[in-house]
Length: 500
Ligand code: ARG
Image 1 (cartoon, helix red, strand yellow):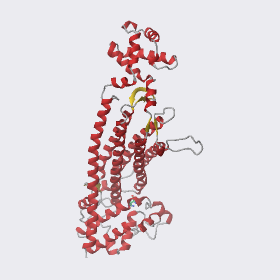
Image 2 (cartoon, rainbow, N blue to C red; image 1 turned 60 degrees about the horizontal axis):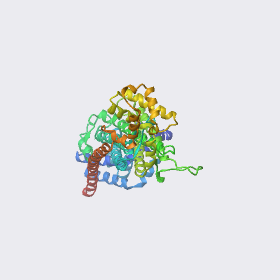
Image 3 (tube, rainbow, N blue to C red; image 1 turned 90 degrees about the vertical axis):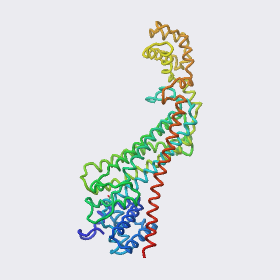
Image 4 (cartoon, helix red, strand yellow; image 1 turned 30 degrees about the horizontal axis):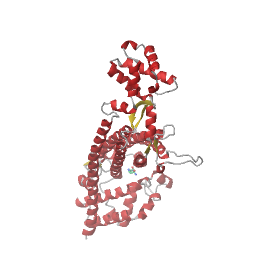
């Protein structure tokens, strides 16, 4: 349809090579809304007659309802959704009316418009999904403030902690993801329409009017910027990747903790796969898929930034190639959040096993060292040496827990480490070790943000307040956008009926 200068049609192979119609099916709805707002504005500024507007709006309306057109996505001779829709409307009306629809508009501003409308919806969906996961994490945390378990660094026992502490740490990272998406929305929610191909138009259109009808909060003012910048979309991909990296950590922790060796948690059967040959198998495949998809997301981010790199200002067709990776990364995040939520809600926790491993663990070593400092006023380095000696002795005696060391073992360590001169007796240390039960290990930890129960409850309270606030602000945003789009639908209906 656009071939006013070139003669004849594109070669079939060239057309199918450059056509984005299939990837554009996701934009169909947004493209129609964008066209409806554009033609209403064209009528208001006197470019279209009432009758022309009515004809165009009527056909956009029936296109939205007509599944037949959707079939053409796989098999049309248009270069993209914009051409497909415009040519359909010209066919449904006539060249005199439909042919005016593209006045003061270009596919270059149109595609940015469609993408921004799609991505702002994606952002709202992701924000909602994030809040669901955070809610589930906090709820499960409330049930597990007393579930003592080892905490790991280098995947080795580090200190004792509680299961809620891990769940809340995930919630904090997802709150930051929410913040990133929520803030990005304002940068995405700006209208490029009216920037035209790159340099605006001599026709006196009303950019603000279109922008407001479509629920945008601002214009992308500069027409070069409007048509050729993709930085906010890269930012969206980057937020998606960061979010996936955060969820991936949850997956990895859960995969490890659900092994027979750890046995801390069990995935619900609904979220477990099996083996074609080993009957005993219960595998954490959904978690592994999240881990795999995080790799995909990282590749997608790389692809998008590589496509953008080195492009000159102004539209280049390369930009078309970022669409399908963007749809993909967005879907990856939405789906992964959904699955993560289901897993968290249904996961079984073996508190007894966690406690047993904790009570035999050397992860109380730092607690013992700190109590020595507090009770005997020796330097941290001395205490570190002494407790290291005790652990070494326990390991040599067959990995026995520290509480099974005898006073003789302890006095041997004391003399080996040259600490007898500080007036510490082996009996004192013997009772000190006995005092560091898993429960006391946690109770004695008093710093802000530690696994101590009061701190767990404080974090839960903070996150509950935060989520309430976030729930309100996301609902407000979604509702106001819904109202705007509804107003546009009403305006379309009114124009179709009213205009004679
Ligand atoms: N299909 C194109 C895209 O997705 C739309 C813009 C095409 N513009 C052009 N001048 N060729 O990016």
